[in-house]
Picture (cartoon, one colour):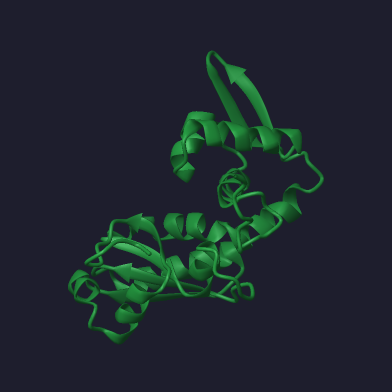
Length: 199
């Protein structure tokens, strides 16, 4: 059965394909084995191989064989490379960009909530106008805002960070935290426990 097109970018065959293409376009100077890509996007090897095949047919990626590994990288010579990279940064890219920008804060977890997370989870609606980020832990606020600025510069959308302690997150009594617990969110760094799992 064919999966539904993702709400973030309905022209994609699947969310997995969108995540895979975004990863490759956001890291155009890097080369990955299909096994590495399957781990990055959290799918089995067969799915990753199939999606790499689709991208290869479209000539959006270049592949080569090294021993038993098929190596994949974005094809920067493709005429659509730059505009497509921009589209992927705006749609599937926020999870990758936020994870990289917030990686050095020492936070217990970082997650995206709000309209972007809702579209990611397939809820229909207008394209997100900003990216809402919750940092769980006790990082320095100045570092959180620096990370948000760095992510915003790459994505091109406002990145709005909020910070809550692990106790506040686990208790869920804070008004915002309670709302996030009830809504779709995407964990991009670390591990969070609701008293349940991510929706």
